[in-house]
Structures are given as C-alpha cells and as structure tokens.
Length: 421
Image (cartoon, rainbow, N blue to C red):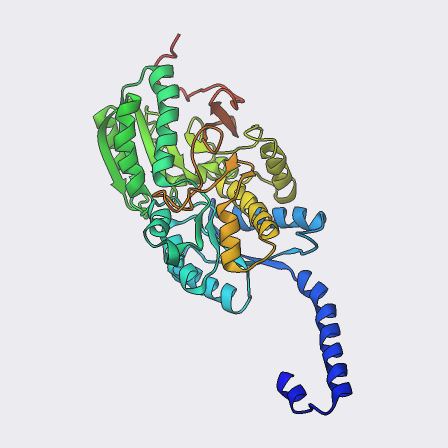
C-alpha cells in the first residue's frame, strides 16, 4: 500500500481516499481481532484413569468462563488431542497445536516422561505450556537451568520432592503419632517421577519417625504383585509407602486378595479417580492416597462446587488431574486478561505473577531464582495436600482435621496398630 501511494504523489485526493479506507478498515478489524477466541490445546491420556479427567475438566472450566462472557469478550476455545500415553503422539499433537491449530497455550499430560518430551518443543515454539499432573523434579529444574529457553514451561502440579514431603507429613500425623508405627517399606513403580519421590521418601520418612526397611522399585508393566507383597511381608513393616501412577488397579486387587496385613499409604494416582472403586471391585477399601482436593471437602470454597459440577456432567468425580486442569484453564484466562494479550512472552510474564485461589488452594509459582522455577508453591496457605482413604465405596478425607470428613478405618485383615489415646 505504501509503495502504491508513493507512486501517485500527484494524486493527493486518491492518496487521501486510500489512507482513509485503510484507517477505516483497521478500525473495523480491531473489534473482530479483540473478539478472536483464546485457544488452549489440551493433550491428555484420555483413556487412562487419571488422564480422562483432563479434557473433561478443561471443557467444564471453558464453558463456565464463556457463559460469563469470556475474557473481555473473547471466548475460550479448546482443541483436544489424545496422546494415548505416548510421548511421540504427544509431541506430534503439540506441533500440530502450535503450527496448524494456532493455540495460545497448551495444557498437557500427567505423565512425566511425556511432559519432559514436550518441554523442548515448548521452548522451540515459544508456546506457554502447563502440565496438570506430572511430578518429575526435572520439569522445573530445566526451567531454572536455562530460564531464557525454557521459561514457557510451567509445572501446574507438585514436584516429586514436594509430594514426598506431603506424604511424610501425613504419615507422621496419621501413623506415627496416631498409630504408633515405626517402620516402612517403599514400593514404587520405576518411572522418571518416582526417582526423586523415592529419594524424598528416604530422606523424610526417618525424620517423620518411620525407619525404612526395604525399597522396592518395579516395572510399570508388572502384572503379578504376589512376589513383591511376599517380600514386603517378610520384612514385617508397619506400613507400605507407595509411589504408583501408571499402575494401581492390579496391586490393589492383589493386596486385597492376598490379604496383605499391612496398610498402604502414599501416592496412588489411579486411586484419585472416582471409578477406582469399581475398577478394583471394592478391593480399594482402606487404601490411603494423597490428594490436594476431593469431593465433599472444603479446601477452598471452589473445591466441592467443582467436584459436584463435574459429577453432574460426567457421571463421576474427577481424578487429581481434573482439579489441576480446571484451575489451569481459569488462571490461563486470568493471565490473558492481566496481560491484555496472548503474546507468549507477555503471557509467561503474567503467569509468573499468578495468585489464584483454585480448587486445591492458593496457586503461586516459584520464581526463576528458585531451583523449582515455575512449579506451584507448596506449604501452608498455598497448596499443602490431604490424605484420603477409600471407605464404603467413596473417597473420604481423613487428614488434616481441618478438611477431614471421615474417620480412619482399616479392613479386618490389616494390622494397623492401636489408635493413640
């Protein structure tokens, strides 16, 4: 246009007309641009117990935001992909989300190996990216080590180190002080996220008052847990401390069928899903698992309403990754509003300043000077977690007392010590 006008210096009227037309066109285009949707890519393990809640919770959040007018008139539009628990499929979905579907941010995966495969692509494509459930310490550590490159990655769940501390805090209160227990065996699947988790367990369990007698790591493809439980029974611990995510149904079913007289407490991602009771045919009775929000609890005023709305729409309560995903859609929308833009660098800057009360607590991110850069902060007044137990077919909060809605109870075959007076 500028060269066209410059060639017609003598046509002042024409030039003025063209300029006016250009300005009018820009004025008319501005509202349309402002009303363009905010597109968020959702990459999840849609067929997995823990992953199925991710796209569902995202849609619920988007619908709620849109029903209230969106973000300054801009609707939230989701583009969803099923990565089938494959890092390769997730990478292809991420590339498509950025290059073809033109999303402005991505929420992806509860599997650490998948998230670690996506992280370099987030850097290359300058795509703001949040995981709703992966726990590996390496995710935020990578951001800290090369902030300029990896600043587009955010860790919307707790690190393995924080998770281990949360479990140890609960174990101390429930088992050591509450049941006078003294010994433990660590039983974790062999995965990227459990290496730092187990290291954390080995460090914090003795501090909590539980001596570690054995440490068992097994392949996620394990189908027969009988030899593992026999080995554990031989060590005679007071409790089994778990770190399981890709598995959950099979060890729980065999724990019950083998009548292992030792309680299980720890991380069990599949147990966080409301369908776990049905999947295990009730063998989950008495299993203790860590969560940060749950149905019927009042972690924040948003916790129970979200859980109830999720069940009303989908027929069951969300897994832990549903709570995080729901919050993430909301605080991405909030960051876009505060930034006044979907520009990736401006969006990253706004996300770093997140201070959002979600379903799991108050969400803030560690800064670039902290080792766990861009991971959500753990602690009182932020996100601190709770211990749940499957009782009579429902997930029951048993710790801490501020959110508990049930009393710790174990199946008859479990020897769980005498309650402290």
